[in-house]
Amino acid sequence: MIVIKGVPASPGIAIGRAYVLENEEIVISRVDIPKQQIRVEVKRFKLALEATHRDLDATETKVLKMLGKEHARLIDTHRLILRDPLITKDVPKRIQDEKVNAEFALSEALEVVNQAFEKMHDEFFRERRHDLFDVGKRLLSHLLKTEKKTLSDVKRPSILVSRNLLPSDTLNLKENNILGFVTDLGGKTSHTAILAQSMEIPAVVGLSDASHRIKAGDEVILDGDQGLVIIHPSPEAVVKYEKVRERSIQEEEVLEKLRGVPASTADGKRFKMAVNLDTLEELKTTLLLKPDGVGLFRTEYLFLNRTTAPSEEEQTEAYSKVAEAMSPHPLVIRTADIGGDRLSQLGLEGPKNEANPFMGLRGIRLFLRHSELLKTQFRAILRATLQGRVSVLLPMVSSLRELQSARRIFFQAQQELLAEGVPLPKKTPVGIMVEIPSAAILLDHFLEEADYVSIGTNDLIQYTLAVDRINEEVAHLYDPYHPAVLRLLHGIVETTHKHGKKVTVCGEMTSDPKAVPLLIGLGVDVLSVTPRMYLRVKQILRSLRFSDAQAMVAKALKQSDSSEIRKLVGEL
Image 1 (cartoon, rainbow, N blue to C red):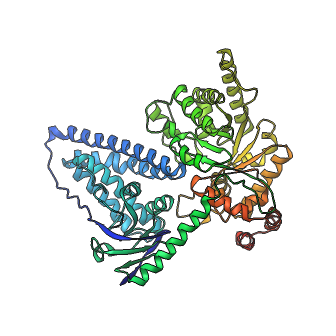
Image 2 (image 1 turned 30 degrees about the vertical axis):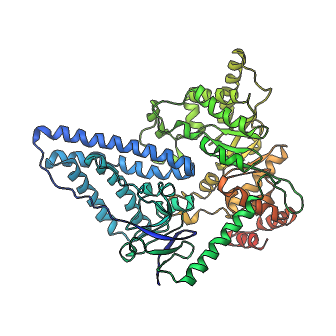
Image 3 (image 1 turned 45 degrees about the vertical axis):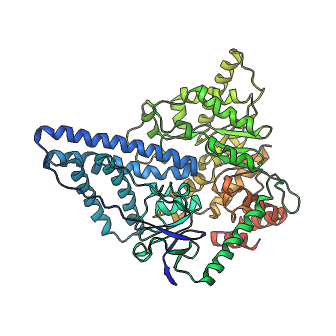
């Protein structure tokens, strides 16, 4: 029995035979290009760039469907690499100046950057090499017209062993009999690790030479919690780990019994528990959970991987399907929170090279700039009200003027439909996402126009603490337990309730078991949770006493350090 220690990248236990993925070596030869063929070679490279952009669009759509909007943003890193002058300008220049083939020019350009990464000691920057390799590999495959190797040859459940695994490869693991994976390279902050965690695939990375020490067919235990890989495990080790895995399965069975059970605390305080819905594909899974509604239906997926904006008919069909399926429970549809970089893909004029798109033209700002998009979406949402209890939610609202402008367009959409003879309910609630500090501070004024509030904790925390949580350089500063965040949340709930209106929380805090007691103690009305964490969060909620959670929050609001707040939550 051989035990090797690596980096625990994604929790969970996997036991099975090893499937060793041979390292793909792409050999690039220099080919001298005649002067009259240079223009053709440059065009060939540009066509490969376009094909790679289409790949990224397809990958983004897949990530969005599988894992949601936050992880789809990881693909933006690849897009930035693909738009970098190193790729877009240096490679064509090399082709022209050195009169060489596109493959060789690209490999030379990539090697320059790779050597720069090699000299860096910081893990964050070293891990970004893998994003560069991923993009480079996609480009080369289009230039060489090679078929990408797939895992379709894995005929039985196996543990994948590889020198390295790129983020795009990770997306195909679950559908190809892969129980878990181990790699020689990689770290906990890599995009591959982040995707594995979200997909609930156990993984250990950074093992150095595991792909040489483990042979195809070897029995392997993968302990993603401790970062251990056991080769040729003893019968005792197998029994021990099978018991651990069995315990985990039993816990899942207990959770299954909570489907349809009221979300009430141990002392009888009733809460509403809704689900976040990213795409129509998740609807079936959502219905099986028997939730109190959909607290956030993200509509971005309708605008991705296409050259024109979705029509009113297409949107109406999608929204109506969800509204009818959820009826009589409520459905909250958020207008698309897309960025300005999507506009050119949709045939519209967008901003040029936004330095920081997350704080740029996106959400309601973009839709007010292109009001035809907003009115079309409003009309589709209003038409869906015929099928169920539908509400509208506006993202990225930072000023009262934005809300008032959006409501004017909403009123116009209502009047147009009524004039066309479409029967509409007397009132369709319009709420705002509170995810920008200015909205939280001026909330009393917003509530004169908004019918309800939904707190987007992900962005609210990022903007409050000035932390981009996808940037591993500062990700450790992203802190849901920061005293400023807690006070801000408390103020939002208090202000909204004073106006006699409801508060939903739909950010990732609702899916964090450790943070749930804080939200309960704050007295939010609705928790909108990811489908994956829905039953676990309900179990936690039902085990708490509301009075205890309230008392804990009262103490937490007096603290000046997040460690003290975490301690109070842990004692509950």
